Length: 388
Image: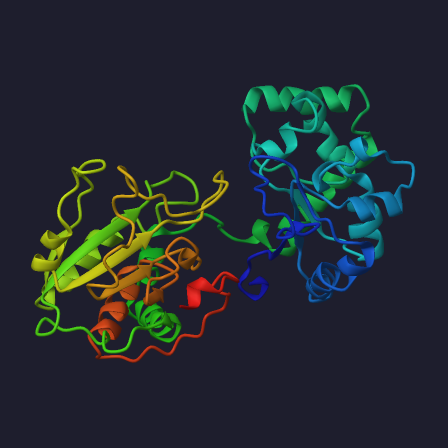
């Protein structure tokens, strides 16, 4: 990255992923011991620092073991997330790991900072504690006033302010921003972004990565001669302004591509009634040769969990026909949906819903391409019934 004039950033210090909770919503915890941290996250950060990374982004993440090791007088309630934890920024990152570049906060609009102290205190403390750059404001005028007050009342010393500004200017100078026009030329960018070469790479990646997790004998490949009448169950989330909606519309595109191959495809619409009033199962038996569940539930920020939520009434769209009608479940995003549909006999993960991925998926379904992807995670979710 840095060979091309882009400052690499190591994120999110002191290490995300130990706590399943979302730091957009609270201050999360890296609960490893100092020894465990040194042998995992510490090795990664040190390698990136030694390789010359210019910046580190600090998260709304606490590391209690190191906070107490570096400041034994800290009480539990005084342990703070990295961006306002001077012992982690100065003692661990600057000191033990030897980082001498720019430290930037993660977004300060996240609740991980707001849940531990009043904002008027937290805003200047990010700089006073050792961060050099403040990322995003919640309210520009108010946050600027909080920061200015922090300088006036001595929370941010002149020395600390000068050091932070110097590091910002040094970073810009190291990228030679003062010697070139740094405003992107949109017309030039459009010649590159989405070009044929990049789309070819996308197709190659999709071809190699789409994973057939498990398969019922005799179902794949599918064809209009074998399974002309297809019932598609769409399970998709609403588009999000931040971090979601990547696969928005992908289900409809998939159905169009399926029809283009000669299949007749209907979309399931939840309905029916409660006990004694539901539609006869025979209606499905008589009208469809194949059922496809297409799940497009993207993991996104500010969301606590991604699980399939079945329709009313009484889980109207739960897979209950798979013992009578060949059924395939395809997840375009989250690879763990077998947890909520364990007895599905044919299950595919695609890890995305781009046009190139959908094209490669269709090829594999109809037998024009082989499944070669190897699951990077435990798609069986540690359950015995998901392997049935």
